[in-house]
Image 1 (tube, rainbow, N blue to C red):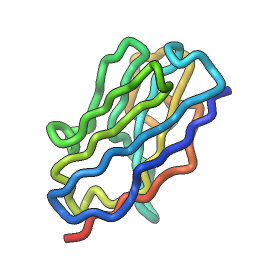
Image 2: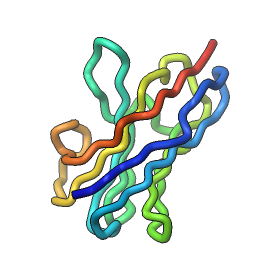
Image 3: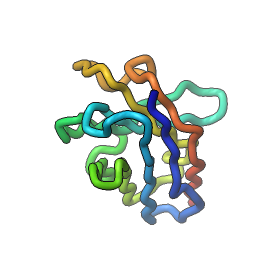
Image 4: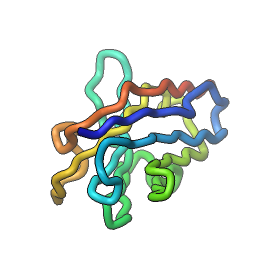
Length: 124
């Protein structure tokens, strides 16, 4: 089992920045892949970024060049640095994790564990 707790959401103006954090517990940190998804009401949860246990990063085209994912093994934490935020980035952001390695990164079904989410609102 892996427990995930997100933090760092909030309200920001367009063009601003936010950093989301996700603290993981319950399993050896270097044995899990981690990812961020986001969801707006009435729509499906969509992939934002992922980072493998080997520190390889993957990004959705919509955030490439603006968002950066990283992880700190000493703190068992994954981060999502979000720059140049746009109103379209408004969503609930969810942290996810999996213990079984796979070459598939972008589907919600690729992950087994989820946090409760943190709201990010970008005003125009």
